[in-house]
Image 1 (spheres, rainbow, N blue to C red):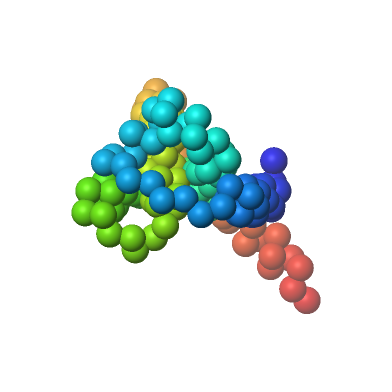
Image 2: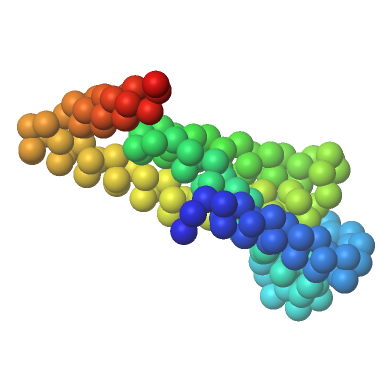
Length: 164
């Protein structure tokens, strides 16, 4: 799919989560850690809030993946960026819930925590793609930079041909 479609998907998920949250109404949750909300006690009492948190976490995940998709082929860099973002999201959520501060609403805090966890498969995927990409260039003997330079030169030649 084109990246523009993913932007629309992310925005739609944010709008849907806001609509669900407005239907659910204001909630006051007192939980010690992000995973306490996933217990049956909370999920049965706050089903619309849980749905809004899940949809928003998915929207945050799609947004993060969309941003790193703008980086071409550098899979280890993508994995490192997503790992850092996920760790910061988890640390932020744990600190907010442990101290009882309300810098962001608890629904956003939980969404950040769950989005941080949902980044793990993408981190592993990018890491494996980086390892496999490195192995294939070593086995074939042709570095990727040579191919990229040839592609860049072809683009430059085409652009020169367009100018009068």
